[in-house]
Length: 135
Image (cartoon, rainbow, N blue to C red):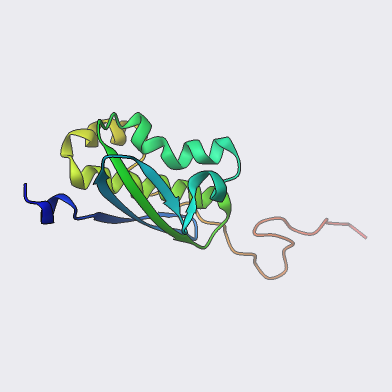
C-alpha cells in the first residue's frame, strides 16, 4: 500500500430521525475521536452517549486505531449519537468487509427510520383527541 492510499480517509453518512452525521475515518497510530471539532467526551456529556457513539469500534472487533472525524447536525443529542454510530459502522464495513456480519447482527448497519408522526388538525397531538363529553 502506498503512502497516498494509506493516508486516505473513508467517508460515510449515518442518519437517525432528523440527525445526520458525516463520518470520516483515517488509519492512525494513535486513535482520536472528534465530533464537530470537539473531543467526543466534550460533545457527548454522558457516558451512555459516548458509549453509543463509539460502540461500532469497540464491538466491531477492529484491531486498528483510527482518527475519527464527525460532523453532525440536526435532531437531539441522543439521535446524533446513534447517527454517529450508524455512519461509523458504514465506514468500517467499507474498509473491511469481515466486520459486516458482526455489525449487522448488532443492528448498527440498519437505518432506524422511525419518525415523529405529525400533529393532525382537531387533535391535541398526533393521535390524542380532546376529551369527549356527552353534554
